[in-house]
Length: 351
Image (tube, rainbow, N blue to C red):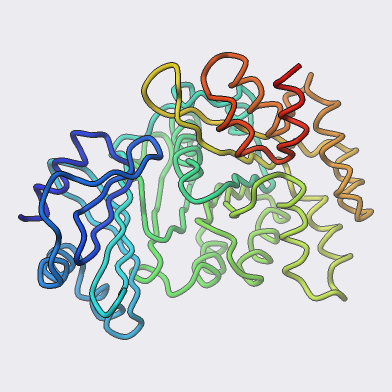
């Protein structure tokens, strides 16, 4: 069994992820369901051979030191993959995330119309949040592509690793990969500010220094797009503030209130009415009322503001999930399982 055969099976099934673990059959995730491939178990030698086939010398060197390595690779027949190689029970294992080669247009992603309007923002901070595999990278790539087709600007992306290979259209796009083109997100972001960018995409605000630099970049007139692993808007705001020492939190509340433009929180569901996936999306727009709540440490009131401002495009995650259920797109069990307030949503769905 060679790696191309595994990739072919996953490609034919439209799998989003592939897992290769010694002593097990290769598995793939298809529409959020993990299933075994009808092929023999992978031996430790097979797993190591697959790893060396796709990992660069640098990725292999990092793996030898840290027992973990993140990298990407491309196969002409199948497309691009984001990979995490790691050790488990003393043998190599790999998780491969399929990356579509072509960036889908925003209008094909079943996202709220307000998301397209965010691509017209001249400056500020826009955050797309959600669990791993919730489609954050695809949403951001589609937003970048929409701006690429409209503006003559300079876009710099900082990614770990590069997922969609973006091609310059009206914009000039530079893509920098962690480890290969820059040592850290914070280093890449610090130097990006000296490279005359208009739009900066930061793959993830994963530490205090990166977060502080992203907010500073938004303050100085850039449009900054980034992600966080949070499930809703109010949690996102609190996560950013909690990164800072207590003595600096009032200052960062003021800075965040002045720069944050929107928080988009999404989760993916397996469609029950047809094949494929569909997103449920929470949208927070930073109106003057929201900015005041952030400044005054009243983020617990953000859900109420979202609910009372649906007319301008805001929507809570549970409302979005409820709409998917009433439109026959997701099951009641899935809807309640992924709700922020499951008991409340269960009552609404039963009404």
